[in-house]
Amino acid sequence: MPTSQDMTTELDPGLLDALQHQVAVFARRAEQTRLGGTGQLRNSMDRAAYLLLNRLDQEGPMGVKALAAGMGIDSSTVTRQVAPLVDTGLVKRTSHPEDGRAVVLQLSPRGLARLEEVRSSRRELMAEVTDGWTQDERESFCTLLTRFNTALSARQSAHAGHPVTASGGTATESAPTS
Figure 1 (cartoon, one colour):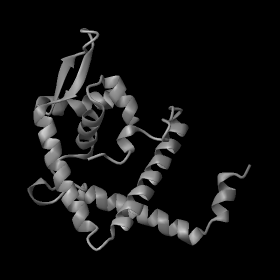
Figure 2 (figure 1 turned 45 degrees about the horizontal axis):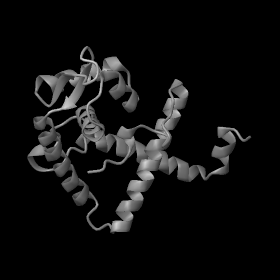
Figure 3 (figure 1 turned 120 degrees about the horizontal axis):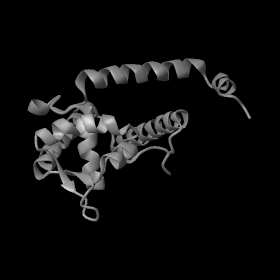
Figure 4 (figure 1 turned 90 degrees about the horizontal axis):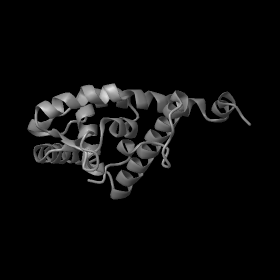
């Protein structure tokens, strides 16, 4: 079986250098803008909050452990990131329907409305940034970026000893449905 070094030397090193450079530039640009959207909502929600709210919207109410596992982060990180969302009324803590002793996190109506505002603003940004692209180009880019993120997630999970989902990543890292 070839080693990763063997596989790397079989590929075009110049292309791999260009790819890693573009990924680094993308990461910097994404962090600078936080890909937050346009207008008044630009930079209005940090990445952690967006990903948590989006997951609760897509998957429904869940406990901290399930949320952490699905996002590939530890429970203490989720607890710390959720606290301000609860304090501002975007997420609410409720009793588990089957076990009243357990607490689940749920997107509040206010949280859903805020998430929709941010999604709309981010859609506008994506339309602006990809203005002049064809529908096929947008779809190809989304497919390749999703594939890239899934591969990074699988690599990180493998190195951390965490199980990888059937798609090779977590639900949060998949392309959003809205």
